[in-house]
Image (cartoon, rainbow, N blue to C red):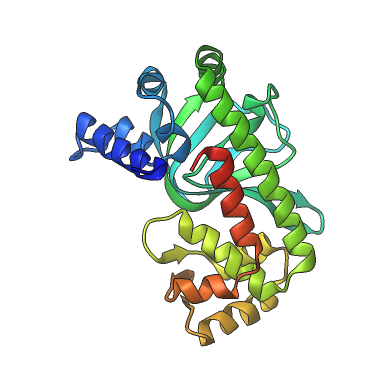
Length: 256
């Protein structure tokens, strides 16, 4: 069995062990890529410290330059980190079920110059910053995994910056939609056009043109705050190379 197959089998075993018919912390934990890769005994020690919380759209996760009191292991949905300046708001990074928010805590800091909020609704397992620090000190595997995730997120931000500078808006829009599609259940992405414009760092009319082009090509369907992915393969073809670069790098660093 491949490593990825072994990971999926382990997730199924864990779900059976803790009961698949109800939503328990373990059911949620195995949906987060970081938690699912921990040894079972390490995850068992963390479970009492993890608390299931809903993530409604727009919920503030942390404010810029304010102490981060909790971290969020995302199980479904997306958290956006944005830089807010006088000229507008630009996305600098996103966190889905592959990761967690609050990396300054991992790197022995307490604040970020960006604001983080829920972009796509979902749910998460929340943990206090103090509990995470103690868990990292007690579990070397957790510390190593989170350090590698920090590097993956840094690489993602660097590629994102290069992509925004060099690639056409339509390709960037396809890349962003693919990454969002990877992080949610199903093919419907609940995204307002103005929000998508902010995430891509452009004005709304430009997004209208780019999304319209993707829709006319039969890749997506857009209507009143919902984007439906109709042809995933075609959307991948329309994306720039950055989507593949980002996903391969994350797989390399996180062990799959």
